[in-house]
Image (cartoon, rainbow, N blue to C red):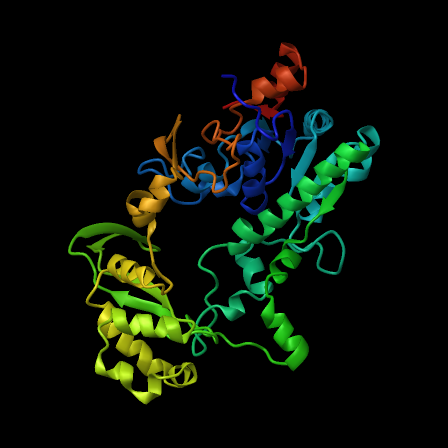
Length: 429
């Protein structure tokens, strides 16, 4: 049976983007067949290459960064020094040979590199151009640079995260990069591709990462608009449920290694937790049944939703007296079987090796990398029935596909390639 054509096969992306917000989106195209050509050099690598984790002994290897490798599988890499005066001769050809040009530079970098949609659209009207600067291409702060760690607090998400009596803590990761920015941008690109199919004309897509982050504040903005109230941090609580929290559970009597900012630490795996959320009286009665109906569940102070909210501190302490005697997995299963929402707070080991649902769906994909060897990569969360997508290759080394891109796509001769290599315009890896 012939292999089915993936949805984006035949689509070429000239990918200048780095860090996460754009590379996560271009990876989605690559996993579904697009030829995504990432542009980097050892002079200016994607700086996520230097971020942890790295295999022991390979901390200084730009090809060994787990963070980079995970979000850049299925891509090719052209080694091109963008700071070289002749670099434009190469990337100008690649732009005109591509369907989509994608970058997330600040406007100042764009201006220095002369990456200008209007110029290239005159030469190729069907080109789709993606700009994803932190704050857009207009406005007083358009030249401000930043990353997810900056955008999360600037966009209001950090203010809502944490406990009222403590400073904001953020989302624990650059949430905007992996969910909001990349997701909204992909929808815009799909719309532009459809419009090009209908009209033959490309589009210039400009996403402000900052505006994208602000868009998910939802009821916080509505509350202020209507009531002039600024919502406070509520920790693990929510106005519509009680109990609603993250409860300490029974740990495991075994050692494991975990990472901290101070390095690797050996310890017991006894920091186990489970989230429980009770939204209505039916779930409350089921919850009480599960924990054996201790006497406090009959106390009037817990008999109604409003009374449970009024006594939530005490309620949380009493719930934890029960959860601490059970593993988080047992707590989750008992609650779920009775119709009470609950979920284990899983760590990396739990998800990769122990979660039966993740394993049953075959989410993680193991790929062989020339530097790091065989390792797990995030797979594809969504599956198309006939063309489910695939991770076609491990993440590229800098310049790994320079020769292929220059010869097969740009049509450069051997002499031209050697000249560019000798001058430091191109790199191979």
